[in-house]
Length: 282
Image 1 (tube, rainbow, N blue to C red):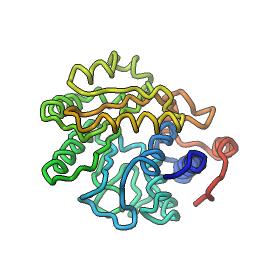
Image 2 (cartoon, rainbow, N blue to C red):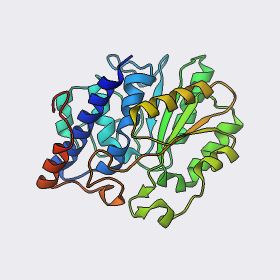
Image 3 (cartoon, helix red, strand yellow):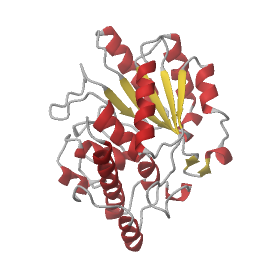
């Protein structure tokens, strides 16, 4: 089990990876990626039982993760690489033609750690439910985790899947919502207000819990451990993770404007000046 101080070092380095990757090709999504760093680091370096050295797309006898909001691939790639799934140097190929690190995760190039192509919003929960049911049928006691954007919940397929998961007692699934209140066109409440996300999941028959400090590593770990304790009791589990889009870089934080905009040279230097290099840049 990795110590909190070591996990925090990974978080800082992951944020450096994100802004450097997006800047290098002047393309990508830094805002949501920065906001979800603590979640990904807690998941891959603390919570999940997974096998980076011998990646098997089927994922038998290990915990699985599915990223539904695939546009935040920079944080996903950074964490996968630093968890040992593929060489760190490959991060420099992000979003370049004919590489394995496309803007949205894909499977046709066989990048270790990636089990589905994602980024067409609304589909990830359905896939995660299917994987969770497969584990039940195979007598595999491991868990399935998924991540979704709060703006993504405006997609109807999410709620069809949520209804199905509770009806079929898919209680080995922990679906987390990145509740940063922002989406590409503005605040979620301005684009399409959804009311209480927690109340909606409860109404659909899910166990729910909130992590109010989604950019505090200790809070995220404690919350995910509480979520894990709720599994196996007949209901799927929804975690509402309150994050700050752009967290860690002051001029990017708390606004939708950095949803899909890369930093220029000057902005990159400003961002890196706020993020300690702890493990070495790629």
